[in-house]
Length: 167
Image (cartoon, rainbow, N blue to C red; front, side):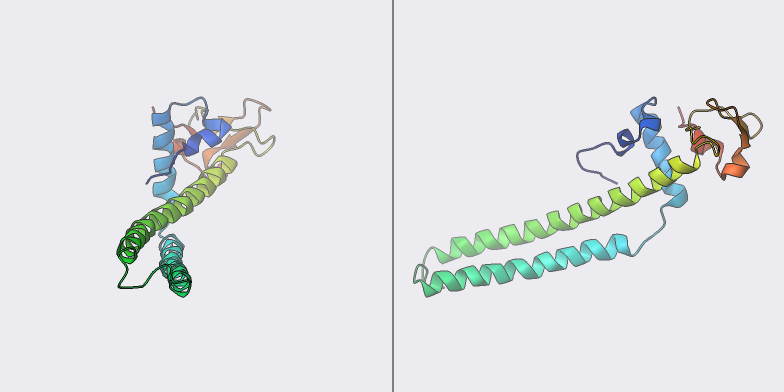
């Protein structure tokens, strides 16, 4: 998956102490566990692309009508018409691919950001909300370094992989 121009894991202060490789592995673990197939990840980018695919030709037709009405272009007979048409078709086809990819990336990035935020919320101490990421569990038990409250991985509903980004 691509998320254009940013490292998603750097938006979360809890992961600042870890390397990019550790954070990528952590995100991969979260995705494998919790990112389910969702129709909206397919249908929304498709819908956006279809809207783009239909709106742009209407705008082109309107512009061409205005040019023909003002007698600036004689459609089909004027040498200026064909370069305009070819330029439009190129922008239209390339643009539809860009729109599809960008809308997919934005949607996947949002879904992953939501999953990561939810994961970071459940790895907090139930008493003081201190992040337990990076703590070493002993026999499935943890002690909050901030308030000293004991808890278990089972009680939090997490595994060791959820607490410690792999090295």
